[in-house]
Amino acid sequence: MDHKRKKYEALFLLGFSLLFYLFFAFYDGAVICVDSPSYINMYLSREPFYCIFLALLRKLCGGTDRYLLAAVCIQSILAAYAAWALAVYLRKEFSLTFWQTGVVMGMPIAASLLCRFAAQRSSMYSNSILTEGITCSLFLLFTRYLAEFYYRRSRRSLAAAAALSLIMIATRKQMYVTLLLLCLVVCLAGCRAKKIWGGVRDASLCAACVIILNLLLDIGYNCALHGEAATHSGDNRFLATVCLYTAERTDGERIEEEEARSLFYQIYDVCDSQGYLRHCAPHGWYNRVTHFADYYDCIQIDTMWPAIEDYVHTSYEDDEVLLEQRVDDITGEIIRGLFPGVWLKVCGCFADNFLSGLITTVAKQNPILILYSAAVYVFYLILLVLQVRAEGVTKLTLWALYVLVSIIVNVSVVSVVIFCQTRYTIYNMPLFYIALWMLLVRQHRPRTVS
Image (cartoon, rainbow, N blue to C red; front, top):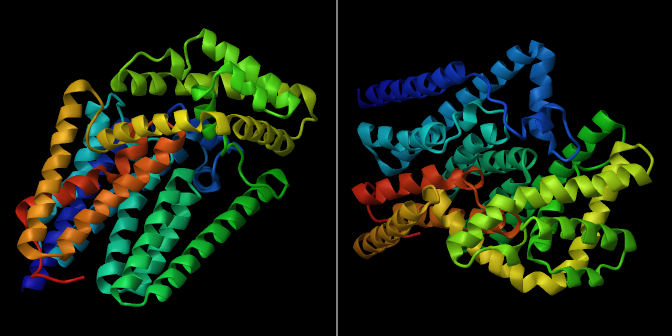
């Protein structure tokens, strides 16, 4: 009887989650954002999976309105399923009650509502034509299967987590964080089982398979689309932007290639005259991170990228793949020339961004919510320490620690190359509040040494 009741409760939660996300899918429709055309038009600078996803729907449904609506419906169903699947899994693993499971499922829903109403986006990621439309949901599923692998030693769950990591990496490069987390957890599982080298072997095998399959998908996609065996372009433009932001004009002397050096001076002079660079930022941490966020796209999208592409298009034959490869070569030359002289400033920029990313993971960055963010992290750590003192190392403490590590890994990767807006850090927001909630109510199994 209890099993049947839990089944009906799970179905009720799934129905509620589906109704919530599908309501907004039809209420708001497909929301076109600034980056959406680059996925719709299958730019070479974009990873293949989301472009293929949209292209297949366009082929099947036809018509802009129909295939984009189909996309947001699928994304909304995926979001509903991911929120529900994680909650139901945690209910089973930590013996949560029905209403506690509902609260856990409500955390991703609450994060979506914050995007819709509090973040001034006027849409949720699930109904936006952006890679976040699928990766936010897949990240929750990835976490669910990775946890099941660690707790239950399930090889099937490990395979599912690796497959989800591959899909996410093939969707957006930021999702290499999932591969780092996967390898870390696999190694820890090996240590837990006192098979350290076995854990390292399994982690290496997972990483190799994901990286090789992603590379093959990338090359195959561009072969089919452009007729050339090439990977997507533009990966190094992010670090090039940070190097430009932290550089002084004299740093250009170290760029060896004449074309790249000339373009650096051209780009630098525009950025310097417009106040885009770090030495133009006002004093104080908040002012620095705000300045970096405000002018990052001005450097990359408005200045650096057009300048290099215009130069390449006027200097080389009209072959898209060759042109993009030459753009990558030039940005690579700029990085190699600038980085040895600006790495300390880049580290300073990283430190500013890292702190900003911790904040945007749990709240919006403004003077009031900065204090809230500091307080909620302290509260989380206090609860974690109390839990360890009361019960020792349990499944719950390991879950809470994993969430902290996931936040640190994601924020670190993002902070190196771009500013930490919520779009890049929201992946861990639901997980943080789920772990905080579970620590608060102290729902867990009897003590389990891991």
